[in-house]
Image (cartoon, rainbow, N blue to C red):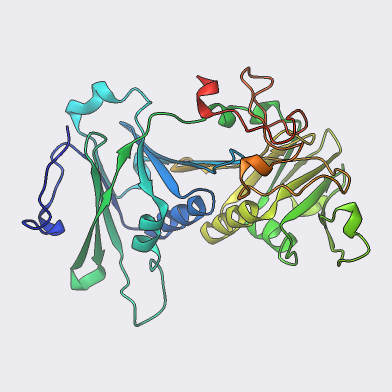
Amino acid sequence: MSYEISMKDLSVQDIHLGNAFVYTIDTNLKVFSEAINVLSKISDQILLQPLADSLILTAFNSTKSAFAKITLSSNFFSRFEAPTNSFHNLGGDVYCRISTRSALHIFKDIGTKNIHLPSFESCQLELDPSSDFAIIHMEQGNTQIRRAHLLPMREHTTICDNVFTERQRLKNKLATQAKVLLNLFAGFDCREIKLVASSTQLTAHRYIVREDVSKVRKTDVTIPVEHFELFHVHLETRIVISLKELRSILHFGNICGFTLTLHFDRPGRPLIIAIDENMDLIAEFVLATMDDFDSHQAHLSPTQSTSNLPQGTLLLQKNASESLIDLKQQKENQRPQHCSSFS
């Protein structure tokens, strides 16, 4: 059921959803704003899935080479209210879509130290999957100044959820604080990097196609095994990944003080970065990988259109063993399969 509201007659402050999930965020507001920020680096839209005991935020880019899923339990919120008469609709397949640009505008000043900008300390999100919009109320500390936002929202019922089930199949597993990996990639200004994992260390190389080897700067950074909390490399691996999404994920983990676990093995299978030390927030990020091909291979760039993707780009396959991101088998200019292939 949609609400027909004349914006000329009502202020946003006067609008409330009668059958909505209500999420109040106080102490974790900075973490929530950083979650919105990291999802915005992947997609221009965020999918919200309200459940009886949690809220799931999901995003994936247009070329299906980067996916993100952040699950916030009821304990993450200062107050969590679920409408009892909506439980029969919570089958796990209801997704609501909002613009990341709109969400970023709302949360961009959270935690700012600029005295000329308002510092909001509390947020209330009203979300009803049957409505045409979501409502976000922001409250500014002791002044009780409130700001209300109405976000257009459309139902979205298709999602590539199978990509989040593959990390148990990946042979290599590393765990460390996000700041360790962020320091590893701090000196790189390229679009792609090559990761080389051996039994004793992890090395990052500036990725250079063969024809440019003599023309550009080379950069290598190595982290010994003792800097990791967990270091299991059962398969020595060389993979090339896009640095844009990776760096935003590491920044998210660093700001929030999370330990990151990396799952990967051979080129063509995904790199999965998991955050699961705190059950109030569980996150998984899936990034496509490719091999260190010769100079005729184009760079992996999730922002490129799929019509320009060369041999070695993303292919999401149907059955479980093939649903890992396989870059080697796709023919030149072939588009990735759609999310519906997982159904």
